[in-house]
Length: 408
Image (tube, rainbow, N blue to C red):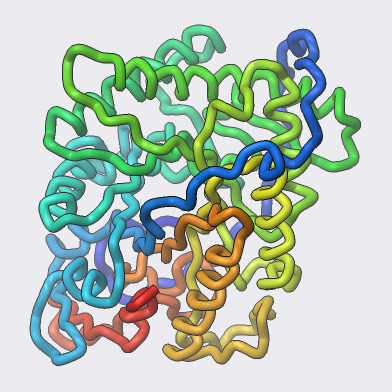
């Protein structure tokens, strides 16, 4: 999903870009095909224990920028507080934070900025989920460009990526932050670190073409994954191994997910063992096929096939939507109550996955006061009502939907 803007300004609405139709760059020849995969559903071969924690998270990446620009948050009793305390009282146990490499505006989501936020949240007992973008700016299906200063040769880029992941995880450990979850890339349906890591998952491709198309991406993902192992084995700091995630959008689309993961592992470079948890985005704005029923079918099939934990790591729902937007679940009201209903329904789907493999749900940027549409054509999907009458001070009052994770 397209996300932008970094400073608190009066309400600004963004129009979502249509999905990229760019052709992929030339890719290197694929390696020898991987050995035939045992098609027996993994759940029948092993039954992993249910996860210790069900992650109930919010992405609060923009919070420090908002606070430094004059945002003040108020709880349901109209008492001034900090956003994470308000959301924690409503059931949040995890904070998701995006990380950029060399952002164009110094301190916007760079390592120092994100580490400081992680230290703040970790000190309050919240779990930390680090979302690597592997870019200097937004990374998503519409744009996922490599950092400008990184090399343009595949082997050199893979080496740089591996070292970057290692050094970043060590920095968090040295800063006193234990990471629970690490996503190696953000919404990488079309790959990451473009142009070398760009992929086309078009279902019209035959399996051999699609696998060849994924070879560069697999090489880069494998390097990032090795960077995690290097950090854990490093003598520089005690790095506790986080759960390693692959994050794709359109979690409701089973055809996409099966083709994508089949192509990645079909290269023979990445195996099922190279990630620990699936992460999926699931929004109501971008197609009427994004139904809860389709989500359940998709996630259930993947749970049975791979036997890995699954999380919905990005979602939101409008409290106000006067635009002509066809929502995927029209029976859920566009309202504060509807925000909670949407998320609770997703929680029910995820918790109902076989083998106890449903592991968490996360809401995207509930406190971003100047981007209330959160990338959609709807006016408002955040969890606070904002008073701009004392600009540049912005007073944000908690809606009842801040409690969406209470007793989950």
